[in-house]
Length: 119
Image (cartoon, rainbow, N blue to C red; front, side, top):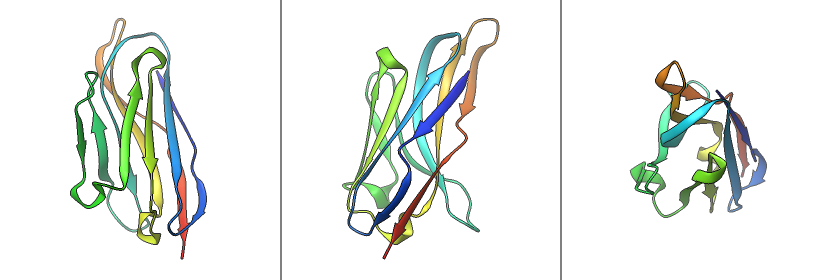
């Protein structure tokens, strides 16, 4: 299973970006999907998660600016980021709990996509 992220880049403060993450491979089902981020010199932190049924969970500091969604038919999760701030600068990682033939449930991570917000 491979998670492929896209949509990162450089944006000015106040701008928006939409990240996408698609899962590829011999996938039977995907439970929770989510986004995490890691800024230089800091630990990786939760951004948001979403269950297969659409229940969401956000880091308190990001509620109202970020929106997570998913398309189960495409095995894809999205992160809409609005009103971006320089402190949102980080590498954003996609995560998914995937049911794979002969493996069972396993946790997968994408390679990360850089988001840079200039002031």
